[in-house]
Amino acid sequence: MLTECSCLAPRVLSTYTYVTGGTTASSYANCECPEPHKSYYNSASKTCDCNYPMVKNAQGMCVCPSGTHEKVWTYQSPYIVPPSRYITCGCPGDDDQMAQISINYANSNSGYNSGSLSLSGSMATTGWSLSNSGSMGHNNSATCYCNWDTPQTGGGCGCPSHLVKRVNVMDYYKDSQNNSLKFGRCECAVYGAVSVYKYNNGQLEMNCQCPQGATLIPINNNTYNPGYYIDPNDQGPAVTHVCECPTSTYTYWKTDSNGVYSPHCVCNNGGELNNGVCSGPQPPSDSCNSLNNLYGQCAWDAVGGILMPLSWESLLERKKDWESGALCSGGMGELTTSRFKVWVCDAVSSCANLDYVFNGTDWHSATNPFCYVYDESTKGFCPWGMASDLGMDDAFFIEAF
Image 1 (tube, rainbow, N blue to C red):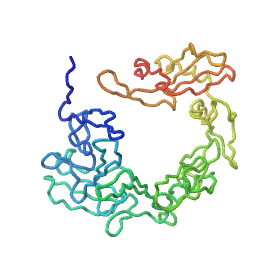
Image 2: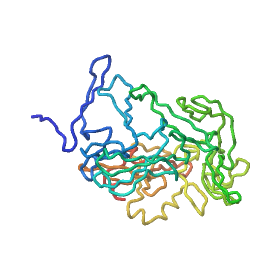
Image 3: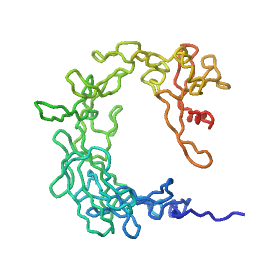
Image 4: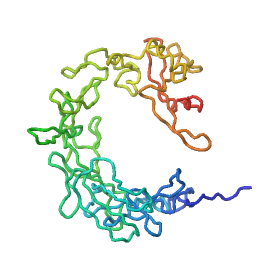
């Protein structure tokens, strides 16, 4: 006999309905906190905790800290009932969501540990303090900060002189006055350029700079510019140029000959970049382990600081990894061809990553190995993919690491 499902406290059962053509198409139920847009379920403490930077008031409800204001954004869709909402705590005048909020929690009853807590990232040293009216029932205070230390008169944040302000407008979220949700940011005017800091005669200078070895290319400010994505919902200066590193290179930060930490175009194979060309071995562009292909770099191995194509010799030298199961190999079975007969999965490959596995009771992290197939025609390894994507992530295999 079927029985009605319920949720364990403090979560409650919420039902959402999809509507098409004015009629109900489907619905689903979910266990969530009583204030799902303001809080989340903490599986460790089995409690509903407030989303940062909200705090709990004397009645145990999640509210914005004193001096900030609550903004409710509603997703503009006639197909979801009740409509999805996004709730933020805004700083005075910060309509573009560019300020960070730092809270001094004076009482552990706020839902967090007592003490000072700030958002991570580039926090400025100046901001505007927000007085505590005592309405929360806790002695909490808050300060709004601008990421680039550029508070504006009347509130809100600006950008330093070497950067431009662009604002992403999300028209599908509206407030009660029909204003669109916006997220502003400070960035270099040129796509692909980054802020570089250096001292000149004891003075800190900030400039936008392309990676060394890159070429400045003019582009059109359309949604797609061969290989570049420009968001059409952005407000601000148009993107007219892009920094482009040569083929078979990637951007890497390092200290140059002048002692300045800055981005460089670095060869994938560890060779030297001269006039846009990398020295050292380069596989043909149509090779399975070409560095231009998806996962192509995964089939290369670092030898003495230089990348070389992965080989059986380098794999067989790793005896401890074979013994522990970090390296596994097997036949291709029904996928066997004259070219591909054997696969290898490597749990300590630079392309392996952490995945999450459900063991029937709870979710936990586990290693997701990266796999290759051996190419009998070229005597080299071709990237195959993540073990989880290939259906080779059984519990014994990936929980062993």
